[in-house]
Image 1 (cartoon, helix red, strand yellow):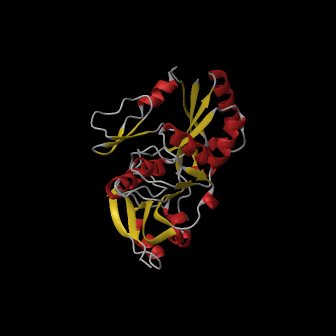
Image 2 (cartoon, helix red, strand yellow):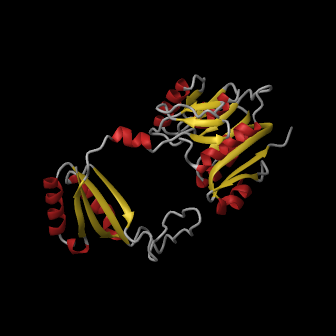
Image 3 (cartoon, helix red, strand yellow):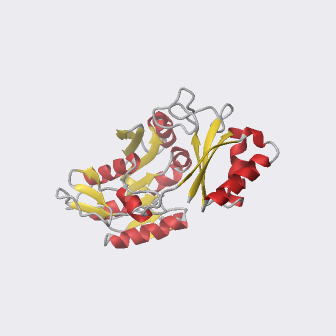
Amino acid sequence: MVELFLLAPAADVETLSDDLLELGALAVTIEDADAETPDEAPIFGEPGMPASRGDVIRGWQRSLMKALFADDTAATDAATLLLAREGGSEVHVHAMQPVPEQDWVRLTQSQFEPVPITPDFWIVPSWHEPPAAARTVMRLDPGLAFGTGTHPTTRMCLRWIAAHSDRTAPWQRVLDYGCGSGILAIGAALYGASNIDAVDIDPAAVTSSNANAQANGVTLHVGLPDLASGEYPVVLANILAAPLKVLAPLLCGHVAPGGALVLAGLLERQIDELRAAYAPWIALDVGDREDGWAMLHGRKPAA
């Protein structure tokens, strides 16, 4: 394997990515060429950094593009063709270097260690033994769907589940809306909940959630969003701020009177707008914060 490094202006990145793939690149990644310098440009509104204005920056002003090729001949041919095309003077070959042979499975596994949610609740990949302190263990491997427990939004929701569940009086119905890997639904099941509906718009998430539920010995009803029906004592939604705002009437409609709603996937700077979006139905409070992210929760007024 050989990796070709190119420097390109923002206006050329999309076209150049397509060209690289057509020329045989196995994968193309894009990074800010000015990262960790005074010219670094946050374009996605990362926590702790201001979002760039869409009318000013639609991409990094200088992008470092990394294209993976099967061998140096393929990489050299691609670079030659790209530089020869009209307008190619704006694109510069930065480097070309071989990629060391590695055991990619072992390397991937080494990047995922057991994740503590509480001192006695841990998420543990299948290739690890549970820590001695673990009393509740979720088995979860990285996959196609979002949710491995490493992201702050997921951990905050799982901490809420662990803190608010009661195994002596378990939740009789739970909805995990936007379930991804099924991690929140499985967490609720491990803490005694029953009749759990886990829904997502992505068929890959449905497949992933079913497989992860089976691996943990729990039962979920998994499907597309129209599977959700009626009211639930607990509704969980770890998505993103924009869809959470749009879904406010729907999600609140699924919360039973006196029931709990838990929302995550929003940045701390988005707290007020989310609270305002849900205010007609449920008053939300900040339940947790971590690394610039926030979790909101509230209860629907009793009938």
